[in-house]
Image 1 (cartoon, rainbow, N blue to C red):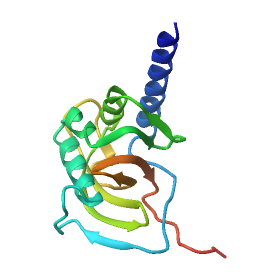
Image 2: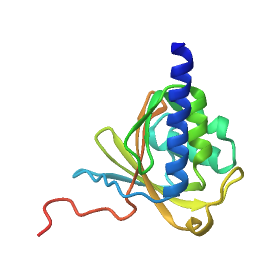
Image 3: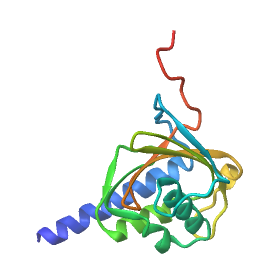
Image 4: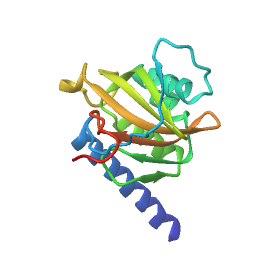
Length: 169
């Protein structure tokens, strides 16, 4: 009986992720900005195991419509937040459902890092698969990642309009 309940909870969590992803689309309102930044333009070479290399490979794979391949860039468990409170994905099926729910593909433009966080700036594109990017196509979007051991352990959509650091008067 416990297995059935856990399966139902997993399906409910996936349904929540999908509903929010469709509702939020490619937008978001959370903001992460660190005080120290290291910025890298997208033309720079990055090792496939560096945060930038992992993020680029994930985005390129998903943009081609390879949801299964894109899902392999995530660790288990991993944390995602696409305009939602953080959700822990515990199975490969949950990670695939999350990646499948993203309506847009993305081309990495640049990254910047602060501590363990790497924020990526993407240009949104259409991609093969369910959903359409629609009016988001051509817009930019930001996601903050934590990458460890060549895998994404956190994926958090953040505001595309960074807030100024320090107090606002």
